[in-house]
Amino acid sequence: MVSFKDIESSLYNEEKILWKNKTYTNEIKELRFTLNISILTIVASLLSIILYFLTSTINFDFLLTLFILLTVLLISVIPLYLFFKIYNEYKKIAKKLKIELSNLRNYEEFFILTNKRWIQKSFYLVKIDDFKFDTEKIIKENDIAFVDLDNINVIYVSPQKKEKTYLINFFKEWDKNLEESIFQLYLEKSDYKQLLETLEKVFQIKKQEKDIFNYGDSVFYCKKIE
Image (cartoon, rainbow, N blue to C red; front, top):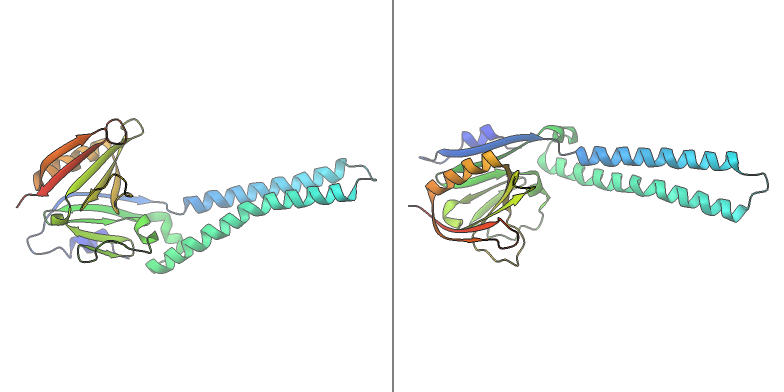
């Protein structure tokens, strides 16, 4: 699995890092949460069955009892099924990245802006099986992708959670009806301001539009400064 240090040591000639953001995340917290819900539901279901038999009379109705048992068992099986489904998905991802599943507890994610390229390593990238982008313009391998700045012409910014975080997307071409770009990241306000200041050093903003989908969002039509 490619690390931040690997990227630093493999830059092009005369390529310099202008801005970077690196974090470590627990990508299997969803798996842990689902497991906890499964255990809680199963325990609650078993306790319900035990309580039912303890409080029922000897001459209880067989069909009613069978219906209650099947209903309780079904309720307990659903979260367990979801757990194993998510578990198998994450096992496939770990295998694709050639790491142990436990390594996803401390997954390194980074975003780098150089004077030549945008480079990012994100967990959601490895989930994309059908890569529909032009492979000559965007290079992607598992959870890491690269794009030359010449191929970025639109930057879309949307504030999240009362402007505490910002969603940033990069596009070659932008259509309001299309899905979000593969190059996207969420940043805290201070980090976002630093990135925006750096972007203004490498891109010429030709046009800006505001309040496209939500109040406060912006689209910057730009061109790389030669």
